[in-house]
Length: 423
Ligand code: AMP
Ligand code: GLY
Image (cartoon, rainbow, N blue to C red; front, side, top):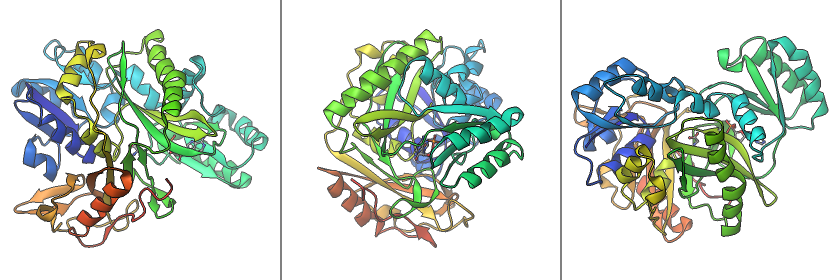
């Protein structure tokens, strides 16, 4: 069948890489894609939110399966757009419908969902401009650090963690009254700070049953030792060494199962990935956030460990026969290290030629902010490429990623040299 992947990051290159290995894949398209996807698929020059353009491409190329990479089009209702169109409704779209995508689109919606279904998470309250004074008083009842979250999508920047009460009050006002994050912070969730180590759990569901993919841990901060600004993720490791069988069983019984049952009880239509951001507090898992898509760079370590044909998994999600699928997982560990443009996540330069890609033999190179420019590959974003390796354990894998990186270079290339340091 003909398949379309929406997105242009390392996550989407990894999806395309995995899908292109399937015997069911005839023609593969990626919109808009990057230099990596152009080597294994046909890039279409379309934005992920251009639903009309996507419709025309789907009809022109006879596409039967659409895999949505990022959250934006899901929160904007791309799945519903397909279902409501006579010519598109037969297409299997991987990603939840708009109503269910609110699990990522609104922090308050996600908190209310967790409360309703008894899913362990930080205690919270939410405020708007109209009761900002109640919010300020609520902050006084909490112990530092204070966690403030813009309710809506804020490109990963909407969470503030502050040690000082006065600063927290000032930020709350700036979010609610001065629209610090635009409309996304017209409502703010204030929550209890949870102290522990983070990990991510990835679930696929067809709305009836679910399967759990390998766990992963990503490294979000730009600086070594988890310091500095938050990024989309500077590297990742799978599996997570501290996620023992006992702990995974707890995650499944206390979080995954109630989440999937909750979606059904609330009539939230969901065929797609559920990315559950967790924190281990003592021996207990608690939910930090839901995302309605795969993580990036977590995809770059999770999919390489999946041996099962991914297109067969997607087909089963489409016909709600996921319970019949047996996921086969590679025992090896996988690690990835993100190469970024100097200055990211703030201002950075683009258009730098990337050297050495063909010299990497022991790792997988997943392109992200990189594009083909005649016979060169040049940087086109802050997150440039993810270098994934396998090993008997994460230490062996990460060593290989760093050896491969030593063959790569571009002007002002930066990466963290301590991925896995806390394990
Ligand atoms: P989120 O966008 O909700 O994932 O939050 C971004 C990051 O903020 C998370 O990855 C955590 O590192 C941190 N964080 C969010 N909520 C909490 C919390 N309640 N307690 C401690 N850290 C948090
Ligand atoms: N790596 C975190 C995310 O994809 O949201």
